[in-house]
Amino acid sequence: MSKVSIIGAGYVGSTIAHWAMVSGGCQVVLVDIVEGLAKGKILDLIQAGPIAGHSVDAIGSSNYNDTANSDLVIITAGVPRKPGMTREDLVQVNADIIKSVINEVVPRSPNAILLMMTNPLDTMTYLAYKLSGFPRERVIGQAGVLDSGRMRTFIAIETGIDPENIHTTVLGGHGDEMVPLVRYSHIAGMPLSYFLSQEQIDRIIARTRDGGAEIVRYLKTGSAFYAPGASACKMAQAIIKNQHHIYPASVYLQGEYGMEDICFGVPVMLGRTGVERIIELELNDEEKAAMQRSADLIRSTMAHLKLDR
Ligand code: APR
Image (cartoon, rainbow, N blue to C red; front, side, top):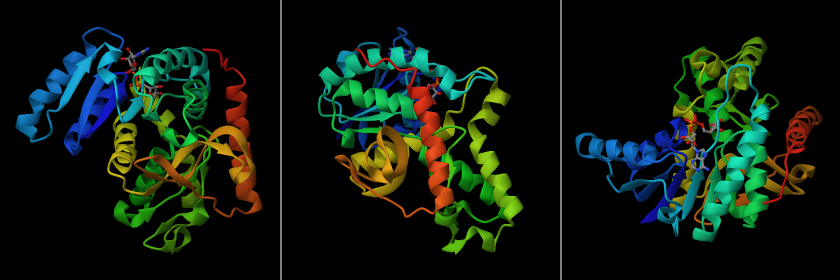
């Protein structure tokens, strides 16, 4: 039985705990720095178990010792975006939180895979990679599953076609310069242009880019959590069940896509050892330029990072 620890019992963390217990097949440990928060949420969730028919194998805690020897640690600790705030504005405050989380988690679970959720995502994944000392295969950021899922949703709304038939590829940074690749997206194997006009495709891309911010504008005091939680669970399942599934994810690049020393969203194959393979797509000049703009935005955010422990 795999042990999956989730750090941060706020909206994203507790939603992941819920999805993970519904999926089953792992022991869940939910940790929050706020005394009682994770304990209370897990107590509620395990009481839902007999009613809803899901796993009750979970504990809530404010003590990192309970995370010892985790196979997978999903890190959601941090402050969410407020209206008008970009993910990049979050960098200072969340970097300090991630530093303290890494210092607690890594010595207790030296063989774990880290799945990062905290924004700004690519920068926090980079920070976790650098501070953990883990090989790059074991430090992964969730963004592309969510962004691709949002694009699938908007295509389904626009066309009325079952989202199961819709496959989208959104690469690059998890920010305003994410890179939806129309050429690598399809509906039941057919190009998007078979079903959608260029104007519709442009509108879908714009709404995908704005997907997180649109929700923040409605919520006012927080950011999305159901779809991010579901995305993390898909990736967690691929890892703990050794599924060899290909997802877009933020990983540390060493020359792939002509980029180095950056965590960036690219297609990867996930399995029990983490990133089993990085897939390099052939890109045209326009797509390469979009990837470059996205990388430039991440680098401007990373410029605010201090890498000392
Ligand atoms: N250790 C453990 N938990 C911590 C720590 C820490 N050092 N620091 C903060 N936390 C906890 C907070 O107490 C809070 O319960 O992290 C939790 C964050 O929860 P929310 O404020 O509800 O934020 P949430 O919506 O879950 O978003 C978390 O995920 O998608 C991203 O942008 C989002 O960066 C944000 C993160």
